[in-house]
Structures are given as structure tokens and as C-alpha cells.
Length: 532
Ligand SMILES: Cc1ncc(C[n+]2csc(CCOP(=O)(O)OP(=O)(O)O)c2C)c(N)n1
Ligand SMILES: [Mg+2]
Image 1: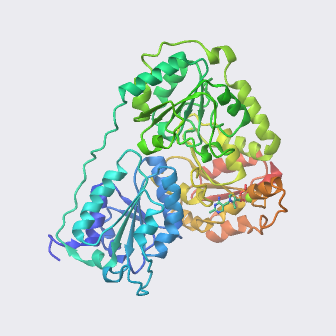
Image 2 (image 1 turned 135 degrees about the horizontal axis):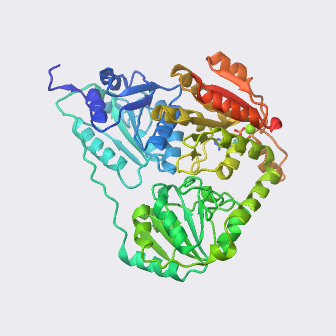
Image 3 (image 1 turned 120 degrees about the vertical axis):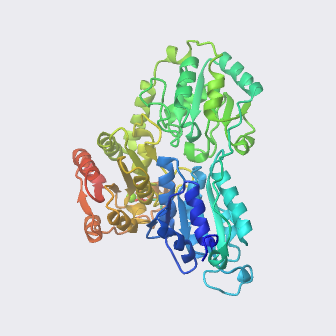
């Protein structure tokens, strides 16, 4: 092959490298081996997962800690359908990744010949989960799609981008040269009229409350300035956890699901929601949060603002730009918080509510907090200990605690933590999962062993699908299908070449996590609820 020609597969790899994508999580198959022809150059590292779902979860964790896009390489058909759950999870939490899947040969597409790995319409399947889904039928189309995908991934609110490439196209020779696609996106400036309207509401507010979500994570300083200027309270969603230190006297943390915070919201006369969907998964107790105060919404996503008929003012802008435009002209006034006091009383009421139901989980979360250094990051799963931790794991910086909020997928924590540890090799990263949820993706322990990642994996063992059992009991349903037999977790870890130990109580958990962070390879720490 002359220097001017390369296979399309190699062209894709070189285009990824030219645009800063230097890692691909995946599993190769005969359909996409032409993507792997380019990988020997060493410019794109490949990490072999044990299941495509986990490859995409790893790309998600990679992006959450680093802000960088990873690729996911999957084969046609089952490779993609296996990855869909993790793609949908990332989409719901606005996490970018570039999913590249082969498809069967072009001549067969849509014809139902029964070729290997056939789907009736693979692009449509991907489109149901991803933020952007494109299919290339020619090299020229592929080039346009790569440009579009990188523009999307660098845009306002990126989610996973999917690109389908027929296996016969991947093998073709092309004279296309890889290009670097310049970042063209800049956030819209805060619209003056809406800022003025919001300022008026805030100036007159007697009891202002701010709700900050994941979209405000980069706007901590501006948020603190506004919070102090209006003398109100701040609540975050789980995705917005730590946007300003939870030790701030006006910060109620990620407490939207709790009675005391909801009472405060009901008392507020103006609620400013920034970078949050205010969705069911942010609130957890009702499908839509309702409160009597006037609502101001700031969001980078115009479509998001369009869904809310109740907002008095909507500001389509980047969170930091909007907050910075709002605050300077606001006369500082003493008001609600000065009169009603800092958040201590509300936080005590919340902790009493948690302690009444989940005392053991609360004790374990506190131990975990003590064990994890300030720059540490916890990847949590759908388990009662994580629901407790969503509030009780105090975070003084954003990006300290990740939870599969939007889509609520079991099995997220371990593979996402693996991706994160690869992205940030010097940061303490911890996985936290329930006994049942861990088993969704437990085979990924082998990847962590293979890569010798010093990863503490804490499994909260309550020998049940406890949340669902409790929901059944609360609904008057005789529990069925909510207790199963667990493996011997320590023996399982040993069989994989990892360490496994049972930590009996909070002190042992602290010690175990600290030791695991300094170990070579992963450690499975079994925390049994009866010990806490
Ligand atoms: C993929 C998927 N399937 C099913 C569920 C429903 N679900 C939510 S929590 C849960 C129980 C999980 O059990 P475990 O991991 O042991 O956590 P626990 O509630 O016992 O703390 C189930 C089945 C889900 N969220 N995701
Ligand atoms: Mg359980």
C-alpha cells in the first residue's frame, strides 16, 4: 500500500488520534478487525473489556474524571446491543464517548438475509440510546460523519456519539487524510433581557433557594458569590454534589429527596435552578418536584428549558457565564439565612431521617468518607449504601462521587471505576456496589487484575436485592425474587488473582480501603451490613 492510501479502518484510527482520542475500550470480532489494523501504531491504546457493556461503562468513567472522550469499539449486532445499556446511562448523565461499531456488509443491510450479527436497522437501535447516531455508507460519508461527531462531542451538552461503519468499507483503501477538526463551539452569551428579569426576581426575593446540578459543576466560584449575595440556601442534585464545598454554611448538599430540604423548598419564594433537569432521578420521591415559589432556570440545553412550562424566567446560557452576569449587580442583602440560621439544623433532621432507616449504611458511608482522601473519587452503584452516600458522603469538590443517576443502571460502579483509574492513574478511585449489582459486571475484576489497578472495590453485602424487597414490603407485596445466593466473594477474588477480605466494621473498612489504595492490583472488600 503506498503512503497515500490506507485502509478506512486505519484512517479512522488516525483520525481519532489526531483529535485527541487516544484510548479505546472494546472487544474485537471478525467484523471489526480492520479497526485493529491501525492500533499497532501505539497512538491509540486498546483496553480489552470482558463484556461490551463494561467497555462503554469504562469509557463513561474515563470521561467523568478526565473530561476527555474515549472510544468504544464493538462489533456489529450483539457488540452494540451489549453496549446499549451503558450508552444510555452515559446519555442520561450527559457524558460523552465515541462508539464505533462495524455493521455487516453494505449489500446486506436492511435485506434480512440472515447474515452474521444482523440487525434490521442498527443505526436506529443505537439512536434510541445515544445522543447522535450516524451510519456511513462510503468513505466520503464517513469523513463527514467523523467531523460531525467531533463537533457534537465538543459541543454544549455532549452525550455518546455512535458511528456505524460497514465491515467492507472498513477494509477498503482510501486516499483520505486524517484531519484535526477544530473546536468551533462557544457557549451562547447570557441573554441580557432574561438576566435582567432574573435579577429583578432575586432582588425582591425574601427566601431564595438555589438548586445546582451537574451542569453547574464548573461554576463553583460564581455560585458561591451568588449564594452569599442573596443570603439563601443551596441544594445540589447528586450530579452537582460538591459544586461548592458541602461545609459551606448555606449548602444543604445533595438532599433533594429528604423531607427537611423539601420543606425548605416549599417555603422558598424564588428557586433558581442551574444546570439541572429537576428530574425524577434528582428528587427520588415524586415524579416532578413541585413548589410554590417562582422558578428561574439556567441551562445550556435549550430543549431542556423548553420542557418546563412552570419557569417564570429561562436563561439559555452556560451556567458560569449566567451566574457571573447575574451576581455583580445584585445588591448584597441580609435575609433568609441570616435570620433562619445556617444549614446545621436541617442537616441534623436529614441525618435523623436516614439514621432511622439506614443506620448501618450510614455508618459505613462515614467510614468510607474517612478512608477516601480529599482528591479521591467514588463510583457507586444502585444500592442502598449509595442512596445513603448520595447525601451523606460529604464532598468538598465536584467530581468526588459518581452515581448512575439518570438511567439507574446496576453494574455501573466497577467498570466505570476501572475506566476512571486508567484516566487518572494517580487519583484514588474506589468502586462501591451492592452484592447483587456487583454481580452484573463482576467479570471485569479480571481487567483490573490484568492491568494491576490499585482499586478498592467495596461490596455492600445485605444478602438481598434489599431496596426492591423493601419496596415490595412497603407496597404490601409478599417479597418474591429479592433474595438469591451470593458467591463467596473472597474466594471469587482469589480465583481472579485479586485480594479479597471481609471488613468487619467501620475501622476495618477504613483500614482496608487505605491499604487497597496502595496495593498492586484490585482488592474486593466485603462489607456485610450486619457488621456495621
Ligand atoms: C439493569 C437493572 N436491572 C434492575 C434494576 C432494578 N433494581 C434497582 S436496585 C436493585 C437491587 C440491587 O440489589 P443490590 O445491588 O444488592 O443493592 P441493595 O438494594 O441490596 O443495596 C434492582 C434489582 C436496575 N436498577 N437496573
Ligand atoms: Mg443487596
